[in-house]
Length: 180
View 1 (tube, rainbow, N blue to C red):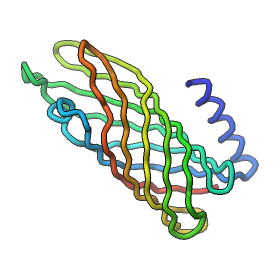
View 2: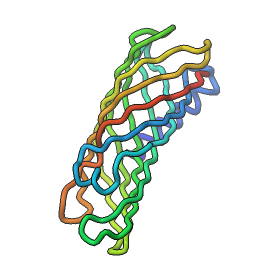
View 3: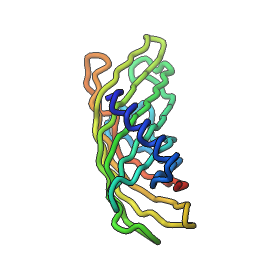
């Protein structure tokens, strides 16, 4: 997975030098976890991230995205403070229905999810592969800039201790991009 990401980063960075269809985007999402126990401890929250997006053929794009989620909560039994961080590294394919104006899109991909939880009991770490799907609308603001509004679902089963937990869920958000 890391080799694939490094090769993709190299290809994306060289495309900037040759004027290819590359865009850089920042995202802000609101996250609603699907796992009941995760939601009880940490609640809903914001996810922030950035994305490199490369058009490989007409309306088909390859996207590499890094996100960050952090939240504080209390453990269910002892009521001690606990903190979680999740950093997904996502690789996806996206289809834009149109290239100009207002365009719906859909994307699907895989992610490498880095999970870390710390509290008085100790710390747990787990890194797993998961998947996601997302759809939305891109709105061209200028020839080089666009906004997108999106809704997605992520799924990643981790097992940091004896219990399995899905650290994914619904997310909705907005992104702002500049296209080279």
